[in-house]
Image (cartoon, rainbow, N blue to C red; front, side):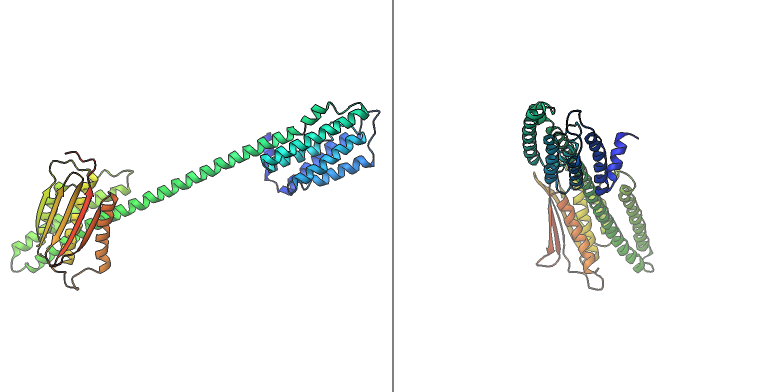
Length: 392
């Protein structure tokens, strides 16, 4: 068994059990040294063993009262020396107590304890040297030994503090990574939900209108009915393609689906017009190369606005305007009709999802959306998206 494993097992013990083991080891070594003294000097007597018992009893409480334990064990060590009992291991209890003061305290307490312990040890050495021919060594050397356990305890405590700080930093870093991962997951879920809402709301609304046209014209105008159902099939295929492209992000690390661009607005308008709503499109972006995310946002806003016209308005005409200047792209969709009758309108909460989605898209690229009814009737949606980085 290596020393590290032994130390780990000792640390795993309950504190009182570990303290009793320390006291047992220290007591065995100190008692062995106290039992036999140098020839010609005072041998072990009742006072010697009484000082040993007091030192060991104090060591049991070294964790709770480290400074008083140092005072008790130090006094016992000085008592042995002044009593004429010489031994190399008699200072072992005070060494353990000094180590405990440093390892469980702070640097200020360690400095004060070291200064006092070194001074007392030097004075005892001077006194003992005059009486017993200095068997304890030079006073300078006697002032140094109390500093050794204090220095060792200071090193151990500093290392523990550093390890604790490193562990805290690692824990904070892990928490930050988990929060960032959760934030990205939420952000991606919102993005995917927004994409699916835009695709389904637009396509299903158009398909519903076209299916209604086909049903009404089934007997009177079979050709119109056939054209409407052809458009339903085309819209369904387009919706499936867009859904596959959107959901691919859930199966891969990165989505490789191309984002919709402004040059696809013609197809979008054609699909709406097939449902019976005439749409006039004005697209004036010049030769500016707009960021892909801005174009995709503008496309989805137009798509959602036209979907709302089909679902929630009785208008037969809508105007779409997409213009660009040096700093922003302006998207505006206006319909001219009153709201649809309550029986044909979607619930308020459903309408709110589309408007919320437009606002979230605009805010995500640093822009904004305003919408509301027009004084003379109809509804207007106006979005302004920044185009920083666009090159004319």
